[in-house]
Structures are given as structure tokens and as C-alpha cells.
View 1 (cartoon, rainbow, N blue to C red):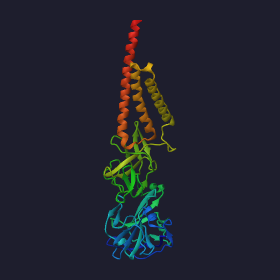
View 2: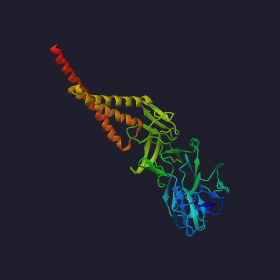
View 3: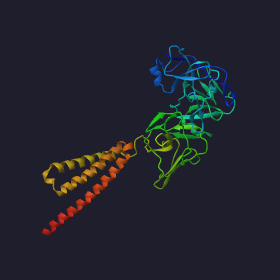
View 4: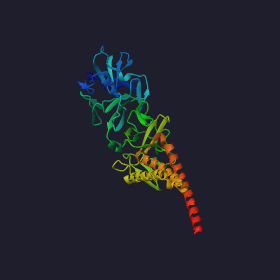
Length: 393
């Protein structure tokens, strides 16, 4: 059983070449990682990474703990993997071979946690002065700014701004505090969009460089608010909306400007691998119950329409007396409506069909145009037949 009996986090005494120089050791007693007993179980915890560190700060990633090494590992909550430092402007990790953050560590096994993906809000604190402003208890709790953070709710790292950074998990209310600017992120912290799913990628954060929806994109933001899951679609140029400095979304709908607060699930920003860039994504609006705002009666009506149209087509195909010219026109007319309503019914249950979206759109447009064309032909044929009968009479 892998047990982590040492917490070796060294408090900053002074800055050396702009990076952190540590001195003291603080010990955490008998800390365990979910009763991890073997390599397979450790690998399931993707937020934990096991390394062997040499005296010259050379790292070797381990898939599990070799029997030749001690089963006591040093636990360190580092925001980025080894050989990476934190970039606070875009909230991402960038490659840097400096290992000064590990000064004071002896050679041995190092267990690094660099994941805050379970946090709703992640706030960055840049330390401008030698940090006697925070302390760490024997159980690993961090005390900073009159707050206490347990293990797993904070991390440390060097930054490219020659400062130390502390990232902490916060509640949504922190976004309303003065001096805190929150940007909504679609995926959890440390992840990005690979297709329509979130994948781990510490090298991607949030950047507003190529996004024009924000009123003041040049102003630094220091917190990420993870958006709740929803049916999202990529921002389109024809939409009229902007995002204010406090995160409020202002959008023009039916000639009226509507405001959506930061806490409301309307927009988020994420790196999308397919586009190779950061994009704004919008959520389809839902009511307070979490269900689509359209009433259930629409789904029921569409299903009934599909059933009736299908029955009509089957009857006209089976009954010989209905297989005349007008009957064949009605079969074509009802078949086109059936396909259009069937796709609309599908979209009621799956509003974002993904790769089928374009095909569904063209199919609906074609079927409705075809149905109206067959209706015109039917009207002309009925006028011709009834007009001929009237002349005979």
C-alpha cells in the first residue's frame, strides 16, 4: 500500500534569480491517497504523477512505485508538471527546465499533484514579497489571507513573471469581490476541447487575444469559473452580444437587450483543438428546472404527426382503390412531411446532432419544399378533375 508520510513543502525565504528558494521542511503525518494499493489503481488517479528525482533534479516519470525504492514518497502540490512553470496571463503551463522550486529536496520518490479540475473557481495569487504571508500546518493545510485550504484545494508553482503563484479553489461568490475578475471556462481547469469532449492538457488555459466579444480583453483576469455542462455551440459572427468587464453577457434578442449574469450558464471560453484557437461557446437556454424551455406538448404533437403520416402512406400503398393518380400524389406529399417531422422529432431529443447537423438542415429544407410542391400539384389536379366533372354536369 502506497502511503505518503511526508509532506515536504518548503517556505520561501528569499528570491534567488527570480525563482523560489526554499528552506524548512514541514511534515504531514500518515497521509494516504484513497488507499492506493498497486500501480493500476495509482494510474486511475490521473491528477497524480509519480517521479523519481535525482540529486541534480533530473526527473524520471514512474508508472508505479518500484520495489527497490522506499514506499514513502514526498507529496508536493505543484500546479504544473516538472520542467514546466505557470503562465498567469493565460492560466496555462509553459515549458521551463528550471527546477529551483525543488531546491532542498533530497533524491527519492516524488508524488506530484498538479490538478484542480474538481474546483468550481480557481483563483491565482501572485506573491510580490518574500512569503511570510502564508503558513502550512503539519496536516498540510495552507493558511493564506485569513483562509484555510485543505490538501487538494491549492497548489504552488513558479511563474514566468519571476514570482511565486498560489492557486486556490474558491466559491462562486469570490467573482463578485473587488479586484477579482472571473472568466468562464467550458472544461475543468487543466483541460481543453478535443472534439466535443474535454481532454487533459495543462498547456492550454484561456486566452482572449483573438476574441472580440469582451469589452476590455486587455485587462488581466485572475480567476477561472468553470461553466456547468450544457448543449454548447460555437459563437457565430451574425449574433449580436458582448461580455462586460464583470462577466455579464449582454445579448440582443428580438430587438431587446437582455443581460445574463456571470453565474448564469450562458457563455464560456475554451481552446478547441479542431480550430487550433480559443473560442467563445454559447449555451442553449434552459428554464430553471434544467429542462428545455419548449413545452413537452411539442414533442408529443410531432410524434403523433409522424405516426398519422406514416399510417396514411401505408394505407394508400395497401388499398387498391387509393392507388390512383391523386393517391400517388398524396403518398409523395405525406412521405416528404413524414421525413421532415421525423427529423424535427429527433432534434427535440438531441438538439445538437454534431456531424449530422448540416445534413439534417438540408434534409428538413428539402422535404418541406418538396411537400409544398406536391401540395401545389395536388391542388392543380383536384381543380382539373373537379372542373372537368362540373363541365359534364
